[in-house]
Image (cartoon, rainbow over all chains, first blue to last red; front, side, top):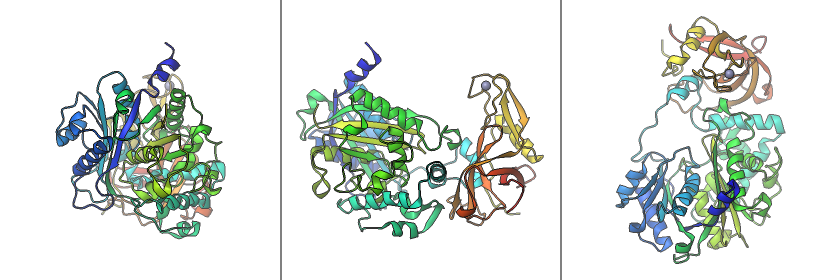
Length: 387
Length: 141
Ligand SMILES: [Zn+2]
């Protein structure tokens, strides 16, 4: 069997059958992080028309181990995965669950996220590990904007991208948020609003940076033959890929091209047998306005430096030819810290046609791509509503 | 005296020559004797060719501003230097990159550009710890 045949055997073998968020999203000082997991799993399993007792594979990333999650929901899984490589971990786990389900290591997998990112209820305080504590903290580095800003100024230097172009990403994403009742910030903004908002770390003002919220989200998967008996139309995992390049930003070979993103995309596209031009809908991890354009470039949707054109030309916005971040993104809908579960949920809802005023007509193939850390790790999914 | 910054912590054993050198005003970096490439952060094995034969050399202290940003707020409460502060990634002449601050310069994006030449300066924090920082080549401007 060739490598390509091995990949192709996984394609369409499993489905996402349930997705949902926690009961509420936003500022939730009355709920612990673990409760956000439990609510999301409860809601996603109901969405699938299954029972929590059906779950025999538990996948989660972050502060709680999959054993903690299993215990909290009262199941005894025969498969667990706690891969934690940043916010894209949940996207990567769809691929891991695909493999485990395909080989019969479990039958019903849940991928769960809960994070009290804003209120900090029931969380373990963060501590510096050896490398950032020694090489970064003495200079004021700490918190994602102080790293992603470096990627962004280097991109501006090499490709001539501008503050106005990054601002267009925030404006476009806010237009989608206005159509999503669950989005935190829904009032329209202009490029000037972004440029005049409070400076945080130049080149970023506060409107260039994602929200910080409390929320949970969960995704339920099973093999394709069982998926047809679930409550909602199945969404097929046609391709999945992952990659990891670095953790310390000094070790990233080229600050403006993510090798992890490229690897994850290449593998997912090869498994699915698709090209970037085949997608009608795209979800990208937007912790910063410069993220989605750089991801489009690393995934091969355009040449280096051209990712911003999708936003400034209106292709990514409502009514555009390639809608991007239709839930309102981490910039305007919700961003807990590890955002990766939420773009999967939106992609599935779009493929099912459940999105009301923000529904993209005729979506058959949707892309989900996310980063962990500062483009350090990445996961890519090709999702489809038919085989 | 109250410290303005968090000190490097923990100092790992394999990085000790870097911090000993900084205390004496020398920028010391590890270099692989097999492939000749220098690297940071310090490791016991060459990340380029897998050799275990590592020596320490004194870097010239010259490099280029690979990327920068201007912080108007700092999350870490132990960092008390008055903002705005220029946070920088410098690429040394010998190859390795490090994170640092660009000092003796106005924190104005119009006056800074990627790839501008920079040189090391040392700022003593305590008897034990001196931090390498960088300024525009040729001194303050
Ligand atoms: Zn070597």
